[in-house]
Image (cartoon, rainbow, N blue to C red):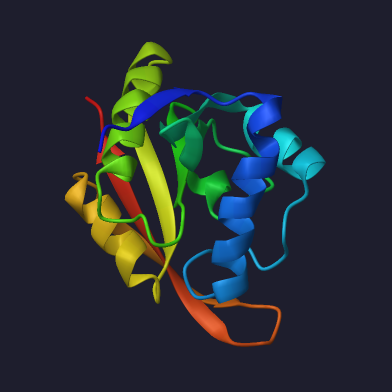
Length: 169
């Protein structure tokens, strides 16, 4: 199984929505609780104002995952504490396809973009109950540096966010 990566385009938005919306529907592994539509996906991932790169992974011509990296957005929880030469990352792989190197392929492309943008560190803020996300970022070399306690979900449940970072310097 060979995964190809390339920059995301607006035409990828429906496939990206399908991936993320299934993850949201299952629950427990993303901070997102509301589904995306293609316009929202384009605005938040493909053409976001602070975006450094958004990369999709393809297997046999079909999008099977995506990853994005942005400069800190002061309106995003926790981002106000990030230095301006840091970036935030988000990764999503199609349900049932995790553990096959897709995320690793995406991170390779993201790391190259981060270096080109002179990013000093990448922040991954992960729900504490997202064991697969914590494992993925740990496997990529991210180390824990902070915890945001008791972040409320829409149903009132409180879930910590684990902050991990990957230093590029």
